[in-house]
Image (cartoon, rainbow over all chains, first blue to last red; front, side, top):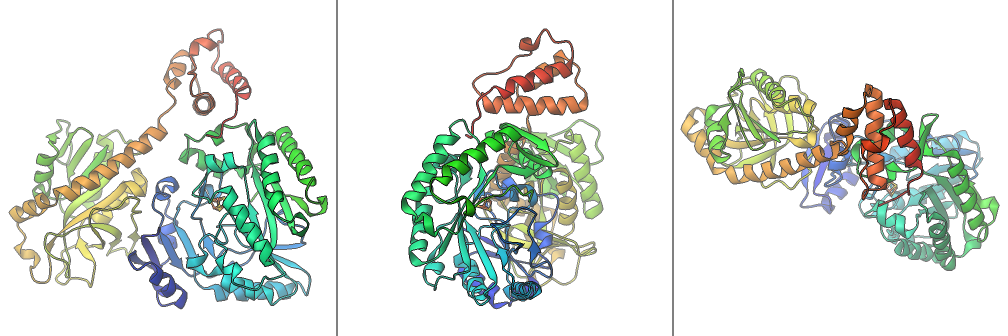
Length: 332
Length: 271
Ligand code: SF4
């Protein structure tokens, strides 16, 4: 899956970097001074790199924990995100990462202990109030778990703090680590879904919807708190019937009363990212949809957005109380 | 289209024969050859000449944005065997210490190496790097013209600790390149495919030129027209638009307004 590793000279002897290297004995290993030399140059093409992304092992020096954009969250007052990894092994055509980064290589920051320090400091600043930490903002939280050991490190860490909440956001079926551990009460495993037809058209390399539902059910049975994320909602003339069927499929198997939260948000993307995505994928029907630009954001027409949000909220209300349903329309 | 940049006539000769290249008649400060989507320029030795020749070839080929580039040449490497072909996975300019990492989006047919580009021949070999005198200049220049995935450097080991560089001759250089034509051909094939894909993606919708011929569009209107025609093509690929459908309209702006309105009524597809 990964046949090239770029390794920053300073992390080459880091135990976590060494462990990752051992998992790819046949991969080409290329040393670099800083990951930015590989990841940031202007002359790169995300679409071409998606054919054969490399893994970059790097050290992060600052901005370990950041405030989430306004309106991002599931009811908490203090919301932060942190990214141990940049980019994702999946290839959803609507993903804003394609617009945000020049490179499709995956960057893994191996100095988890520095993230830990920053999380602890952030918690202390809020003096016992609930604080949310969202992972899976710049990557999928679980998809590369066998390589990163992210869950194994961060879930027990956050579990030690009664005022901390952790959201793992994923489209993956990599649940082994979670199934081998004691469920943490303050951790929400949030699964993102679109209907089967949209998965097929746009969520390249993502495991099938049914497999993800099964994974979610196994985690719920094991005691993990589950979140549902229908974000982005994507428009299509049959969207009502497709989303209705998706909700029915999910709630037929999942215990609805145990669900922690549900969030919905229609497709939206910052205009500069959208411009870049269209340049990369001019042949993508999604970008020829009924989109408009307003306040620096490209999204569906306001009436259509509202219609979709209203429809999905109503459809979801058959399964879950409105109090745990959140609209996320943040601008990233 | 792929552009090959070599330093020496002896490196060029086997490539000219293999790809059936012909000398171009246009006045160029560097010898320039081409045939069937492959161009070759002979830069001379050193970074300055290599950068100038790369820019010259870019201009000579119409300064198009999606050409592939391949620097081919001999290099020294203390540890590798004579005649080994290697693709650069990193290129460092010894003078400036700047480093580039050409993204390898295809499976190379050979080993890869770090290349160190020197300003003048060195008496000793670095630990693992291959050393040459052009790669950084070609890559830095070419990746301004095309995306980095389309620019690469292929080196053939001409000297090592046991076989020092003073023994390298024009004849041995020609022979080294000749022996690696299969690998060069494989890289050229993959790069050409990528370049063609990029060119295809950038191409305007088929009816674009016909609209431009019928009305006068300003630069921003041309962009908008391009976008709208692209959306049309994606929404109803089975139905090509014709300027005749907008025949009654006098101004480009009116065409865009009507086109936009008609698009809103079209079905939305996701695949
Ligand atoms: S799973 Fe999420 S992060 Fe990964 S490509 Fe899809 S949208 Fe992007």
